[in-house]
Length: 187
Image 1 (cartoon, rainbow, N blue to C red):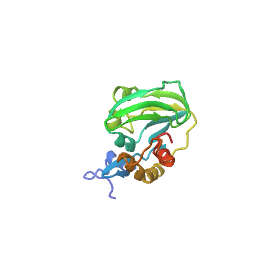
Image 2: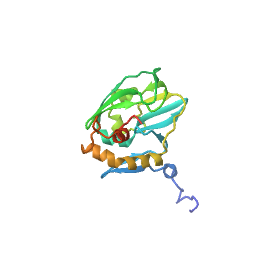
Image 3: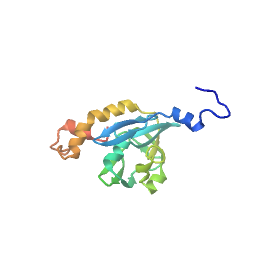
Image 4: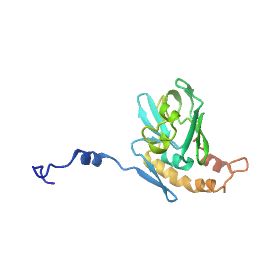
């Protein structure tokens, strides 16, 4: 590397900053990529978590957003201060491809619900890892999957997800219990 001079001022600050940014992991959903941020953990229910003071901030992973389609409406069954349990139904999200219940990924108390996403759920499509966070829960940090572990989880469960999407698996009473467990977003 040459020394900075009048004709060569050296690296620009943006170049230095770009060198420190970690590239996301990519999970291919057929031909569609789902980008997984590597600066946070993940829950098996397809939510990401970033640790905040006294708890975690939660949002939907790119995999979940890609499966659901364009976000249209979000309804909460919780409010700040509510006590929540892991696996508890906390809301519903409606999107262009599906409607899904949302389940809390940890025990604790609801700290905040992101008012920007309630007002404009499309933030989940355009900025899901930043402004598109959903809620915070105050409590002990849960066991989270690393980005690499979550990628492995997606790779292992993708064949079943494809069968569910194609209607080849029944998740009702006739469906196999292990298939219902694997397809559940409550885990």
